[in-house]
Length: 236
Ligand SMILES: C[S@@+](CC[C@H](N)C(=O)[O-])C[C@H]1O[C@@H](n2cnc3c(N)ncnc32)[C@H](O)[C@@H]1O
Image (cartoon, rainbow, N blue to C red; front, side, top):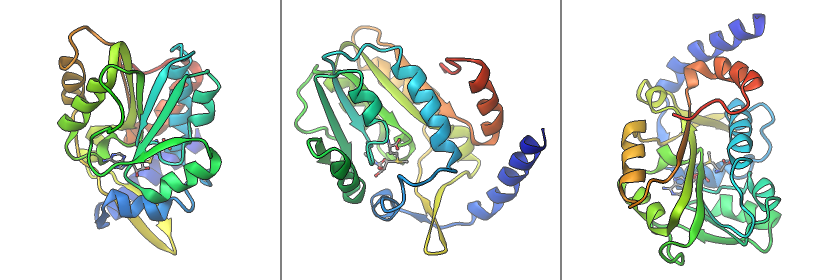
């Protein structure tokens, strides 16, 4: 119980500081964060996302599937995806630094540096799964991005998104990391869950299961507790 109180205290007291932090554009910020991104044992959001991702991905059959990971970063989930036997796995990201780290870990990886939201190289109706973890709110033109994800998605395909809760971002929550004693905040955009759901499903002529798991910063700990007791906790 004392841990819960301390964590809540931390979140409450750290927010005002973060509110005042200037924001860096995602490509530049992640080029810097790439150096330490895979070495964050205490990053609670990554730990929660791990739990969520495993829960979701275990429900999807990826044998011989084609998977696109948008905002793939360093390929944090790739071992788990690859273990499920997909035919193809493509990674897209705007940060050269993050992709370089991924490429070192997975030398055969098919990755693409994004300059906009277009998943160039992927034909229409070719993907069984479009996955995007902890990246959605960095995307400014969410309509264009989701149109593109839906374009490449096969009928019956799945879009799997995890990210910070938009309400938390709207209240001033930031995605931050430390580099050389400086706190760097990465620019986010607030996209409501309703908007994301509408954009994701309206582009598809058949109903697709759209799994949206948004993590609410202010309720991190409650969520962590729920994750322990509920195997598949959040379908918003
Ligand atoms: C918090 S990291 C998440 C990386 C990885 N998906 C994970 O879960 O560890 C966010 C990633 O999104 C990428 N990103 C930011 N804006 C993007 C955009 N507009 N399109 C694609 N990727 C973007 C960043 O470069 C970064 O690699």
